[in-house]
Length: 123
Image: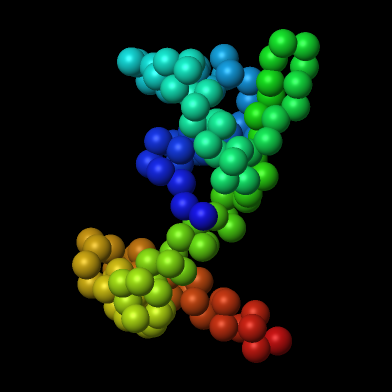
C-alpha cells in the first residue's frame, strides 16, 4: 500500500521519533503548521492502511510505526522498477547513474556497495 506525500511526511516524523504524541508531531512541522484536525485525519487514514498504531495514556495518544521505513521504501523502489523499468534492476541502475549528477566518488561508493553485496550473497 502506498502513502500520499502528506502521509509520507508524517511517517517521516514518526519513523524519526519512533513514538510520538500529537504535540511532538506538530513541533516537527515548520510554520505554517498543519491543523491538528488535518494531522488526525492523516493518522486515521494511516491506521486504516496499517502503517501506524497508538497507545492511549489518559487523554493522549502516542503514535508509533507498524511498518519499518526500509521495508516501505524497498517496496516503493521495487514498484518503480516494475512499473517504469520493465522490472529490470539493471535498466533502473543505468537510468539512475546516467540521469543523476553523481560524482566519480559517489559512483565508486555505489560500486563498492554492490561489490560487498555480491560477496555477501556468494558466501
